[in-house]
Length: 259
Image 1 (cartoon, rainbow, N blue to C red):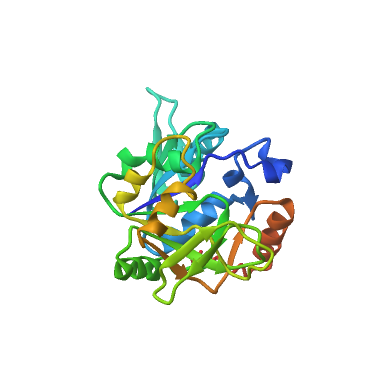
Image 2: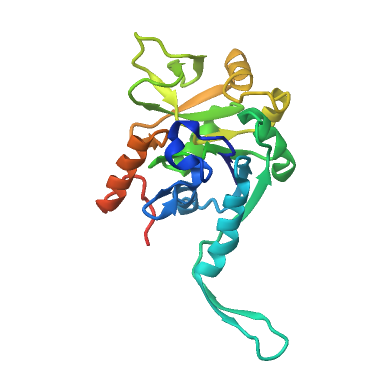
């Protein structure tokens, strides 16, 4: 199953660094947060990624182009006709497709643009700025049991995003903006989607969190995987510093993999 990561936005809310690089390439523990997200999926056996690039996409492409060499022993032979010999490779077993999905394309439009790389298959989708210790295998099995077009991971945090009303059968009955009275779960990403979702996306101007998910709600086709563990996005420098401190402590909750 392929993992699609949205990594094309401008990241204006963390402008201290995002004026130099895409937000998913801002580092935590000397590795881009995008790498941390991919390590989580890889731990659960999902190694094939499609990264939806946009703003400063060259930074993402150059990082991955160098990553293989930086994690290998290499001989450059200039004595004859030249050449390069890779002696060993200790990089992750990843297959990464980096797609230019446009500078100003909305989230739904970015998903639509990578449809040809997914085909008629179930796939995983998440944002390129949030880490979690969610069990991806359990998430996928839950989605299969629910039988809906879409499942998203729902977490409880201090309310700042749109909120979810969830029925007793774990079907989402409302997908709306927060209010001062809310103490509910939010969409944390880490989604599982059936290929039917592409039919609910009109084009580049479609915001994934609006029409496509709202249509799923109306059809009773959006489920919530309740996660009570760790989740943290990186929208501000304060949130970045919090993730840095957790990583430096040696006990980062999202680090489910072993070195």
